Length: 115
Image (tube, rainbow, N blue to C red; front, side, top):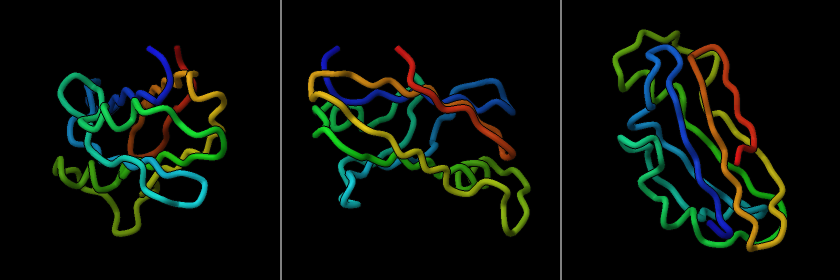
C-alpha cells in the first residue's frame, strides 16, 4: 500500500469494531480531506478518500467518540470525559503510507502509528 492513510477502530468497552464511529481528516489549514464512519470490517467507509497521497505537512484526524457511544445507547454525562478525540500528525513523503489503529472507551484511548 503506497501513500495515504488507513484507520482501524476498536470499541474497548465491547471488544469489537467501532461500527458507526464518525471521523474526519483535515489538512493543516483545516480543509476537510475525508469524512466517514467506521464500517463492519473496522476500516472507514471513506477509505478511498483516505488512501489519496497526503501532502507533506500537518494533518488532523478527529474521532467523534461521545457521539458514537450515545448512538449506541450508552449513558454518558451531559459533558462527556471524551467528546472529540483529535490526533495531529505530520505526513512525510506522499508515497509513505500511515496506518493508525485507534482503540478507545468513554474514558481513554490509544492511537499510534502502526504498520
